[in-house]
Length: 132
Image 1: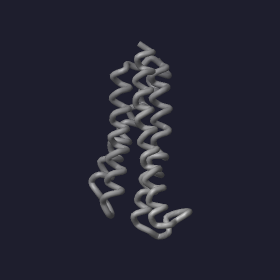
Image 2 (image 1 turned 30 degrees about the horizontal axis):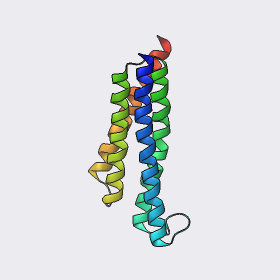
Image 3 (image 1 turned 45 degrees about the horizontal axis):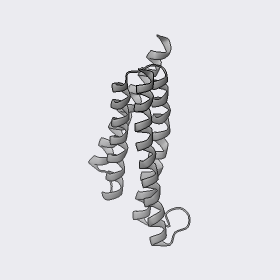
Image 4 (image 1 turned 60 degrees about the horizontal axis):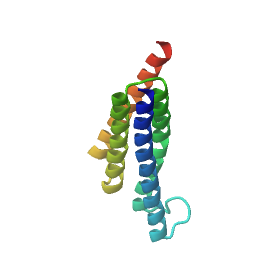
């Protein structure tokens, strides 16, 4: 069971890292397009891409650690898939809402709700596995 859970954690970790690479690439591409070497140069398009990447880098590492620890503590693979899928969906929806919509957006709100849900379930599950 643990090996299957580790494989599940590996799947979602790999997909989340690919999301980080994609968001980083988008930021680099927009920096090149606008000839900005550092920061956002006051360009709204670059600011949104940079923040989408920054937001993902703020939340994804905790999720990756939680997925691996859950797998190692014997969490069922279905739980790993549910948390990993929710986290990936949350981060992807948030990034799309931030990159393609100006100002407050449903994508950003929905993405954060899914992200918080995934991290909360992971945290509570880790605590439960830690005391049981």
